[in-house]
Length: 574
Image 1: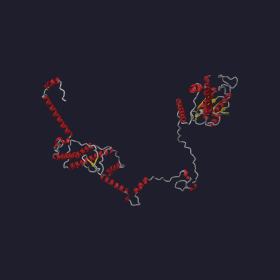
Image 2: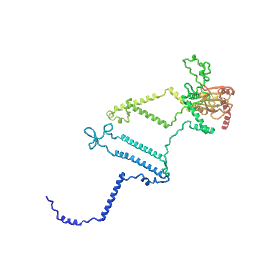
Image 3: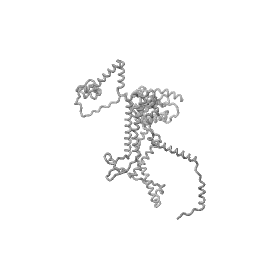
Image 4: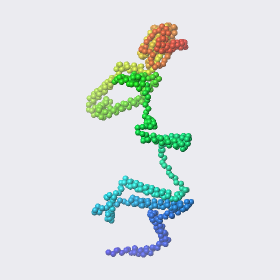
C-alpha cells in the first residue's frame, strides 16, 4: 500500500530548509588539503623507517665521504685503498649476517603449522602437494620445551661467533697483506683491556737461581756465568736421567739423593739401666741379649718420687660459690623438675595418680554430692585420711633422722672440720705464771682434750709454765676464749678467794698470776703427736731442751722473754 501522505506543515517547511543551506568556504578546503598532504608525507616516512631495505644503500665510495674517516691525508692513495678494503670487508660481513638474522626472525615469528596427511600417510601442505621426507623419516621436530629452545638458541649464538671469528681472521689477513698498514687514524688511541688479575705462584728455586746468576756474573762475567749455569743444568739433567747410568750401578748423586729421603739411624749408645740386666756386657746395645733372663713374668718397676725441684701439681678446681638467692633458685628448679617427671610417669601409666587431698576445710568443695548424702561417714573417712597422712609424714621424718653414732659424727665434724680447707695447723703459745691451783690445771687439760688439740704443757718447778696447743681454727678459737676470758687466774682455789687485783703468795714470787698469749700462727704440720699432756722439769735448761728436741726452742725463748712485758702491764694497771 502507498505510504501515508506527509503532514502539510512538514511539506511546506522543506523548501525553506533547502533554501537556507550555503556553499563551503574556499579557505577551509585549502587547509584540509594541506593537512591531508602532511599526513601522506608522514605515512611514507613511517613506511621507510619500517622497511630500511627499500632505502638506497651507500656505496663504498660514498661512505668514507660522509663519515670523513677516509679523507686523503698524509698517507696518500695507499691509505684510501686500505680504508676502502676495510669498508668492503665490513659490508660483506653485514651481508653475511643479514640472511641469518632474517631467517632467525622468520623462524622465531612463525607459528607451528598444522600437520596435514594424505591417504598414504604422507605429509602435504595446504595445497595438497607432497612435502619432501625429513631426515630419517617421520615428522619434523619442533622445539617446544625450554631446554630444546635454549639449546637451539645457544647453537645459533655459537654459529654467529664462529662466523664473526672467521670474518675477523680474514680481515686481519687482508690488513697484514697490505703494503702500507698506516691507515689507522693516529688521533684515536686503541685502549686494550688488561687481563684479569690472577695468582702467579713462583716456582721453587727461581729467586735462588737469580741470586746465583747475579753472583756468577759479578765474579766471572755474563758469558762465563751463562756457560757455568748451562753446564750445571746439563749435569743435573744427566744425573736425573735413569738411562744414563748402567743397570745395577748408582752414581754418587743418586746415592746422596736416596740417603736424603731415609731417616738417619741412631748410633748404638750406652744401654739404659732397665735394659742393662738383659745384655751380656751390660753397657751397650750392641752386646748379645741374654735369652734366659726373658721369662713370662712381668716386672713392675718401683715408682720413683719426683725430684725435689719439680713443680707442684696445679690445685684442683674450686667449687662454684653460690649466693643464698642462687641456691634457693636451684632448689626450686630441682623441685619443679621432679614434679614434672612424676606427672609424666603418671600420664604414661607407670605411677598411680595420688588421691585428692581432702581436709575438713575443703570437704564440701571436693566432695559435693557425696558429702551432702552422708556427711557423718564422709567426715569420718576424711579424718582417717588426715591421720594417715600425718603418720606417713612422721615415718618419713623418722627414716631421715640420724642414728646416735651418725649424730655424734656430724657434731664432731661440725666442731673440728677445717672450714678453709687449707690443711694448715693453727698454733698458740701461752705463758702462765703459776698452775698451783688444781682447778686451773684441770680446765687447761680437759678443754685441750675435748677440743682434740695436741701439744704440751711444760711446768717448771718454782717458775712459770709454757702451754703449746695445735689444732684446727675452730678448736683453737674456743681454747683462746678459755685461756684469756673464762678462767680467773687470780683465784687460789680456797673458799675465801679474793676476786680483786690483790697479790697472792702462790709460789710465784709475789707476782700476780696471769696468762699471756706469747705467739699465734700456723704451721704446715703438727709438731707434737698424741694427746695433750703435762710435763714437769726442774730447771729452765731442761725445759728448753724439751722444746729443742721438736725444733720449737724459739717458742720457749719467746715465753721466757715475755716476762718483762707482763711486769710493765701490771705496773701500768697498778
